Length: 140
Image 1: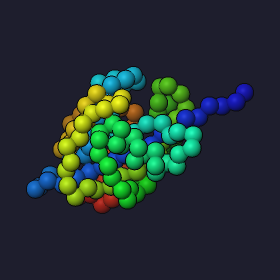
Image 2 (image 1 turned 90 degrees about the vertical axis):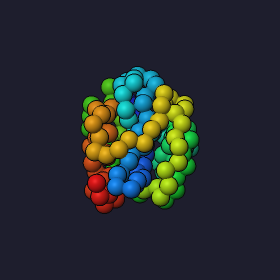
Image 3 (image 1 turned 135 degrees about the vertical axis):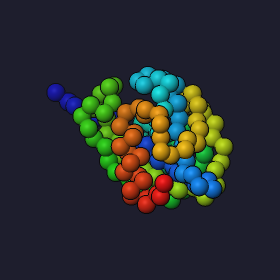
Image 4 (image 1 turned 180 degrees about the horizontal axis):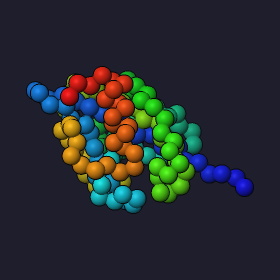
């Protein structure tokens, strides 16, 4: 039996205010986890590199463009996505400015949310954010 494994990317984008740190989140417009907060991201297309997919999904879902993202890690928990076996490669970065996001594509909304988070997140995105804070040395 041939196993189907999907590959996704997630964007972990931070910015800083006067004395706060913000993360860019979307409110999911579709199931699974409809109306829950999540990182911008989505499925990698067949002829697309992982980094390119992450930048494309970030722009499609939030209208924000970024460059020079760092790979945070690979997330492969068996049950991380209720739709089926899905691996995600997360990329993160710190923006100097705070561009205004606009939810689009499968994101119902997009907002900068102050850390530490009070919201419950979809999938394993809380773990991905925790790892990105460590890897990028983000000081809260």
